Image 1 (cartoon, rainbow, N blue to C red):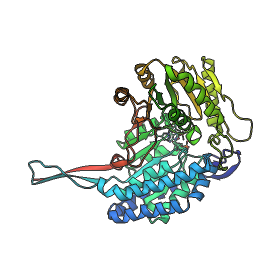
Image 2: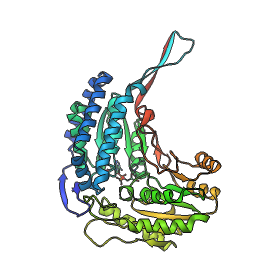
Image 3: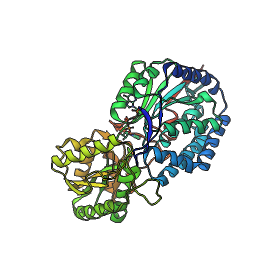
Image 4: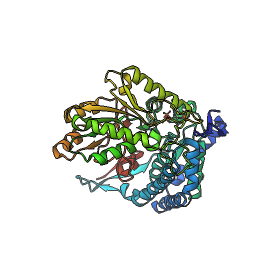
Amino acid sequence: MAIASINPSTGHVLRTFEPLADHAAEEKLELAWTTFHEWKKTPFSLRRQVLLNAAAILDSEKRIFGEIMTTEMGKTIGSAVAEAEKCALGCRYYAETGERHLAIEEIPTGASRSYVEYQPLGPVLAVMPWNFPFWQVFRFAAPTLMAGNVGLLKHASNVPQCALAIEDILHRAGAPKGAFQTLLIESGQVESILNDDRVRAATLTGSEPAGASVASHAGRRIKKTVLELGGSDPFIVMPSADLDAAISTAVKARTINNGQSCIAAKRFLIHDSVYDQFEARFTEGMKALKVGDPMDDSTQVGPLATEAILRELHDQVGRAVDSGARILTGGSPIARPGNYYPPTVLAGVPRSSPIFYEELFGPVAMLFRVRDHHEALDIANDSPFGLGSSVWTRDPAETDHFIQGIESGQVFVNSMTASDPRLPFGGVKHSGYGRELASFGIREFVNIKTVFIQ
Ligand code: NAP
């Protein structure tokens, strides 16, 4: 039962799938390879139309796709429907901008003409996580198809129905069958796909060990990779901040997607002069959230995606307490069927504790009191991760201090971190490398060909 849909709010097995046999995987690779040679010659106008059609399908059937997401991985139905809408936005973004991002760039030299041309690489393997089961895939698929590459999706084993639905959307939108294929395979089968010469590059969104494994196999075959890995984003609040906005955003930023987002705020670094107020009101806000059935429109926090995630999160909370942390609210699984964990606030996690350096992938916040902006920056950067960051201050000098000093792929000022198709997305340090979205994302998997004509 390795590839299975299990409803996280009940524990019921919805459907199981046999992993693809070697000969079936070979047929899909061959189809990807032959389709690539046709697809790369298609005009931008045709690729654009496929993405616009996909956007229209996503918009018109968003409730159906939302229900598939919610029943497979437990996100609230409202956020699942919004995710389908965001995928439509991503498709439209690349439909409208893709040709411009890949236009020939003239570069004057002594030659009669010299320029750069962007050409597709071939089949690209995408190894994707379950937490944003549609958005993670569409933010890969839209630029991939627009650039003239073809996509092979190895989705997380707990969201096979999302994976099949996405393949179906793109085929109904007019993409040839081989331009985008879902491979229902287990993680152990990824190495042989990466070793195949027809697969030219890979992108992985997920955990550090998975990223290291895929990148090392791809590296041995000299194939480019993009890695979008974990995060333990700081959320910094200074005395000049709008405290009401900071507190309500902090609650949302920690519990978005039931706390399972790479760019969720995870470490809250609060200036001494506003700490006590922040701690009391933030804890109140976390306690007040409605936890329950994710299909109920009024639910704010649903179950964690799998039982294993629940166990791991609770183990981390236990280790934090053993190392001296105090629980201000929450702290143990909710006694009901399904993988329910309450919004939890921890204060006083010592920096000497291993938990301080780990990612908490669920609705658990760690609060820290800081003396000034220097200490805030020091703690923010004391992490193996460097994905996003959120800074709350109205002081221009402090704003600059954080923008310049934070070791992260993105810094949001007086706002929570979020992805936007118009802005590049990615991290530094153990959060990975390469960028998705915007012009940077579509240029990751192209041959930047230099042309020099004397
Ligand atoms: P995961 O266990 O690493 O799984 C992600 C994907 O990698 C799944 O498809 C998984 O397949 C596959 N995989 C796991 N081990 C592999 C291996 N050794 N070789 C090849 N493939 C392997 O991560 P997750 O628990 O699903 O996702 C949570 C993590 O993703 C968190 O750390 C989160 O921060 C990160 N994330 C990052 C971003 C970002 O943009 N930076 C976005 C979302 C999530 P199976 O399911 O079959 O194991």
